[in-house]
Length: 198
Ligand SMILES: Cc1cc2nc3c(=O)[nH]c(=O)nc-3n(C[C@H](O)[C@H](O)[C@H](O)COP(=O)(O)O)c2cc1C
Image (tube, rainbow, N blue to C red):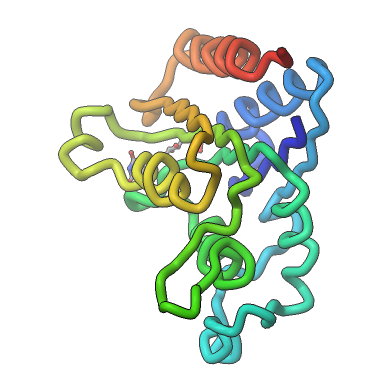
């Protein structure tokens, strides 16, 4: 698999980082090619500028600084996201990645009829590692936007047959070491069993 792994957390000692390292190291050790985009380390600017908004529907338009991300998106067959839930959504840096890259000519195409067609149909797998402070029932009541972003919104852009593996860890406001160990173990097992080459 050609994995593009996108990380959105500022702290190297976060649980997200541990989960991300576990997943990407495991995928690499199983023979997959893994390219990492660390949005904080890249200093990614999440703001969709006035200029970008004006040219948003121009298929040909893509800011120079985003071309590298576009090229990585087109090379991958698997996307891996890892991020914490902040104010019921992904960190702004990842939301901005979507705002700026999920545009016509990159992630979808506007047909002459005006209908939209997905343009990431080469992506056959999405893996999402998402952490939450609150418990699952509370998130369920709120509609769990990060879950829907990964399992419904993103699903539209990729291959119709793509597998979406949503791997959440809830209830992390004061996690015990045991809970953290279990979360890492869960990711290790899921990533291995779901992505084995065969
Ligand atoms: C700015 C901010 C906003 C947060 N908002 C939420 C939220 O809306 N829902 C939730 O379940 N947890 C929320 N949390 C808790 C984080 O999701 C939790 O600390 C994180 O997932 C734990 O993983 P980490 O150690 O990798 O950061 C928030 C935390 C921060 C810092």
